[in-house]
Image 1 (spheres, one colour):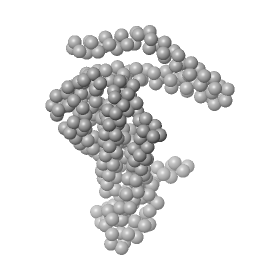
Image 2 (tube, rainbow, N blue to C red; image 1 turned 90 degrees about the vertical axis):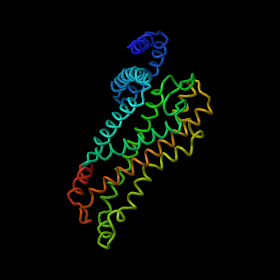
Image 3 (cartoon, rainbow, N blue to C red; image 1 turned 120 degrees about the vertical axis):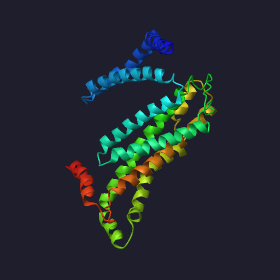
Amino acid sequence: MTEILDILNEIVLTLTDPNIWIRLSLACILLVILVLFSVWQNTKLEKKIVWSFFRGLIQIILLGSILLLIFGIDELWLLYIILLFMCFFAAYTNWRSYPYPKFFRYNFIAIVTSVMIIMTFALLSRLIPNFDGIIYQPTESTGSSLGSFVIPVGSMVIFFAMRESGVALERLKSDLLKSKGEIEAALALGATPNRAIRFLLRDSFRASLVPTINRVAVLGIVAIPGLMSGMIIGGASPIEAAIYQIVVFMMLLTAAFFTSIVTNYLFTKQFFTSEDQINLEFYNIISKKKKAKKK
């Protein structure tokens, strides 16, 4: 209870610090310039710009307050429960964009499995610093609690898994609809369902992973990644920040790949009947959204 009161007191002290509001007021000068430019160009976006700014400001302050509470957590089981809720909402968000039968269930299973395996591996192999598998030992440059590493890194892994599995599924669905004749021909010649769509699965994985692989290839040349920038601003050594950044990128790539594989393989099980034929009912369901978009 005392720790919670200390955190609440820190939130109040931060929000009443005049220096913060002075900096925010100076930043609003840029907002005014943007609004004036919008009026000049008659984009009719002035209200949306102002509303989005203040809505985002409130949301980000609330997020910061919640993170202060979460970052005080050292119990690993409680952090995993928080990650589980985040996985649920990630799968739900994906399902809202791709409302196909059983997709929420498949995507949730895939995201949870990949995130929990990767985060557990990161903890046990000490990819997350100062954690010996049981006790987190904070230092001045690495954060005050285990939650200050597990939640930010876990959220990045979840977001990447959600986004890339959605991209892979959309590519797979599009290719399944376009390649119906080829798939039927392959089945007629005796190919198994998995063999008939193997090239489609491969292409869907490539579509989701190639952009991320390209980002890894230009690390430190085209741009300084967000995690590395944040650690440097926070006072960490640039070399240390660079190593953590590449470690996190490998975690993100692995999560994206594994989640895409599991989601797409489970999804394609519905595309075929038990007699190894195309499930026309399911085909019609996933093709309806495509037709609606064309209209």
